Length: 121
Image 1: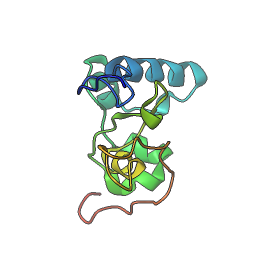
Image 2: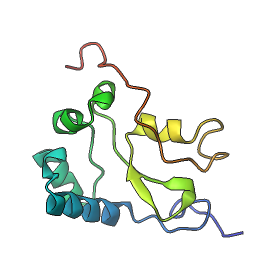
Image 3: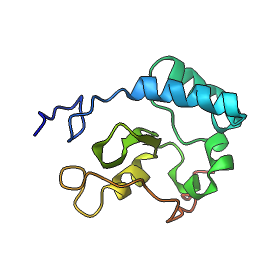
Image 4: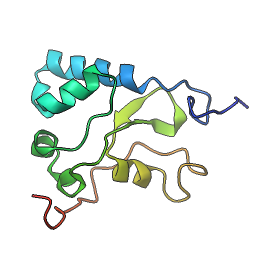
């Protein structure tokens, strides 16, 4: 069994989240989906930081309206090299039941929708 550290998934895959975000940003731009990322999130990605759920994100992913302000880390599906961006709450949901330690996590889900938090609009 691979040695697992904070820099690797439970299967030993090295986490390259900043590079994964840059690659996804570039792919979205090439495919005409650049509007998913706001100027603020683009700046965060350029600095190697994790973007956050904001108005631009919610415009494309309205089911995340209740998650505004949450980080959008890369989720390694089943601990594999395959990554998908998931807001923190949705990322935790992908690892349920059991949480990060006991459940390697599926692909995440478009549901449930998280309604806007009171005062978050």
